Length: 162
Image (cartoon, rainbow, N blue to C red; front, side, top):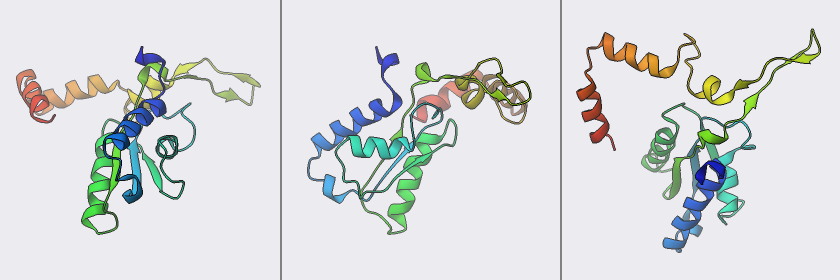
């Protein structure tokens, strides 16, 4: 199942298939940008890993961005902006994630020289608001209530945003 495939491997697979379908663009790619929220355990700069694992040149720069839920979208927006600014012509951009592989984390307590209780990196880094401490689902409910957004309006927006 896909739960056993890392986010980097998922991104590598998609990028490799993209390059196979469009074999002439490999030499034209100016940069690779991927969004990734739950980066713990994925290694340094997952976008760079994807680029190199997909067979792209080591000379092509790659960047990983984290804008929480909007990370993949932000990667695409950054690619678009680079094209608009004339700084790049061909980019690979997207988002990667595998929440099933988000590791448990433990902080080391130097006063007691022991580890604190493990906690979920998915909950802490991905699904909990850093400012209020609330679950993001509850935050969404609060926003919907405050701005009088019905479930039907949310569903309608969801359909049109795909």
